[in-house]
Amino acid sequence: MNLTCNPRLRILTLCALYLAQGMPFGFVTITLVTFLKHQGAGVEQIGIITAMTSLPWAFKWAWGPVIDRFGYSAMGKRRPWILFAQTMMAATLLAMVLLPDLATHYLLLAGMIFLHNIFVSLQDVSTDALAVDLLDEKQRGKANGLMYASSYAGTFIGGSAMSAILFGFGFRAAILTQVGCILAIMLLPILLRERPGEKLLPWTRGQAQLRPEEKTPSSARELLGNLVRVFSLRSPASMGIFSILVRIPVGAMPAIFVVFAVDQLGWTHEAYARINSYAVIAGFLGSVLGGFLADLVGARRLAIVTSALAGLLWIAFAGLKPLWINPLFMTGFLLLDAFVFATLLVSTFAISMGVAWPRIAATQFTVYMSLQSLSSSLGGRMAGWFDRNISVSATYLIFGLFQIALIGLILLIDIHQTRRILGENSALERTRSEPMQAQNGSPEDLLI
Image (tube, rainbow, N blue to C red):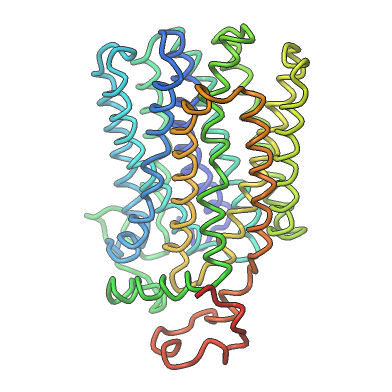
């Protein structure tokens, strides 16, 4: 069986890999932070832990050129990297079993979470590259929605099922359960080829089946030159700026909200984890709907609407402080917040693929996703400052206004600009010799 000839199997594999990526995030940002708070950790410590979950993803742009440039094509262009990443994900989780007391050695825990997420990010880049290689353009919106929904499903498992295991059987049992899940998912890339005729494993028969246009760039210099040309355009550059800003609020909120809910609202740690697990389900539904809406109404229009809705929701929350003591209101807010923001993020994925130049689509898409991860990490590092200096209501008001202001960047993005200026498969030599204005473009299309 191979992924090129079987669309359903292709979607199943991509979704399963995203499921594996979501579990560590849910475990750390929901289950582990609740457990650490229970053991006496403060906002600063929890903020560092959550930041270490996102920080490796901020540098995953470096994986893109490596994956595009090197590989073992006899087993597929992306599949060997996926297998390596999943093996190391399991190994780094197993190493956490040896940790001593978590609250006392939280910096060591943060370091190991950082190391684990390096390999999670490697799997993510490899999976995104596989999606860019194999998905038809008309399927990208729906596929991105289902893939991101699968990430939410993994987050739910990490934040709900792992919470029950952690509080019922301990930290080591929760870690070993995650290892088992990763190894089970790993069976898909082990047993499935990318293309017919490739090797299943290094010692089996087969050979590379890449078409000439699918082969790796001839040099790192050529790859870098293509990236420079793409990001000299207004739309790809604007998308980059938007990506580094869009997740700052959701990066800061988990650390701020868990302390606020437990210390000021009197929630139990178990109640917080349970309600956030429900929010993950809402995010899952928002992802699925967002994928279909992105294809139906356009990813850019959807991003504008959902960014406005997210900002207005946070502003409304800041102004309805008397209702914070109402559990039904708070639960509804968290569910709606997760639903709207998940829909927004799916639309940004579709925009990112749209402004990517097909010649370097995998690397360029990874740059955008890396910037979004850096955005989350920046938010996590800001959480302590907001907690010390600004009230919860003022924090949500600031985040709401900030989110609405980001619409200005979305308006600068023309999804079709990259292909209109550079062409679908323009050769680097041709773009050097032909003025960009001659390719149906205008000076206003250029950023610099």
